[in-house]
Image (cartoon, rainbow over all chains, first blue to last red):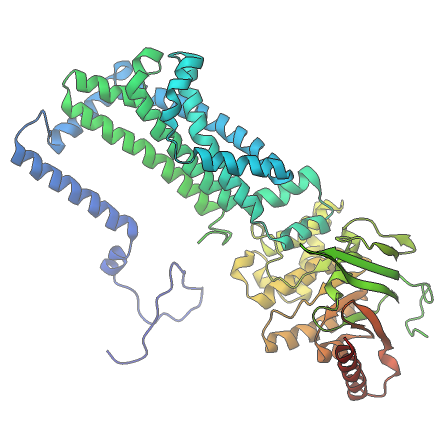
Length: 286
Length: 256
């Protein structure tokens, strides 16, 4: 091709009145769409799975995609006995721990931002607990709270607190001196300065922290449900998968695992949407 | 002596009296500004000029209320200044001084509403000042969509819209490219003439000082002290002024 080369900029809409040299053909646009490519990857995985299942020909070890999806649909339709109520139970435990954990993280952050000892406490505690999986403190929860929903919430809270607190603290730390001065210039101080300047300025880090907090809590929750789900009365998805395994309902086990992944992805998607409408729109995150 | 001759003639608006400012580095307490005195009258374009390290930004931060002098006093309208506040709006050197989560218009409106201006009037005033800096078309854009020069113009509009007693500017154009810087200087002169604002402007650029100032305070470094306080009107030409300021700055540097 002759003529000047063009360069590609990411996600820029042609400004009104711009001279269009040539439109990009639909299949190229299609190919350049990340979402489309990811759907292709998922379909490819399903294809490999299906082929492997047919090859293995052992529904107990590896059920086919079709059987799994059928089991998933059947379980969705099963009402109170089905997967929907288990999802509900998991979400209840997850959100209770996540909200409580976020509140505690916020309090820790306030201390860490305002006092040196608070900062020392937060950085010591977080580096000490970072390598410890949240389920590892389950024996302690068992001693203190017994086999109960309280134990479950304790673990999900624990799993939320540290990633959220660290990210919040770093976020506040990273607010430029210029923006702090600007806030004071407007006559803001104390609580109003925090709410009107520091929190929005730290929002990219806060969002990242909430995101890793909820996924950390969800991973801990599913593992915990597999151990004590039935006994606490808060069954949840982890317990659903274990119970179906004991019933040898293997397609349903696979369906349950898909459901666990879907719940995780749903939260990711929710945060992605919130980020798109806030920090990305404001150019604070690229 | 001052030509502006209104009711406040002879009565300085902003007075710095024998101010000494220290800061603490990790190993020592350092004197940044030593016994500096000057006064700024209403409507003046008062430029504080000096090499880097002469404490000129420190001095401006003290006037802004972000630092407290260990000795001496700073008064505005005859009263000691308090902590930072909207009567001393600041335009900083950092182009990222707009709130990224607010549009250009919201950035100008927000501080106005904080000082109790009604929503309607704040919007009206913001639009007028945004028009004055020629950014009406960008009013609904977010700061990250603007160039460095445009961000600076918004910051100037935000400062002037607050109608502060004095507008403090801390090397506001130093981060801009040369062409944009010259345009911004012209624009500042025009805006100041239109609004009659009192401006205290810090710079290390002799040409910029000579172009903008009605009065130039030359600081010598280590610690920052007043080398000269020049009434620009007494010089026959811009060249004569630049020569005088140049030799003062050179002198101040050599002695340090």
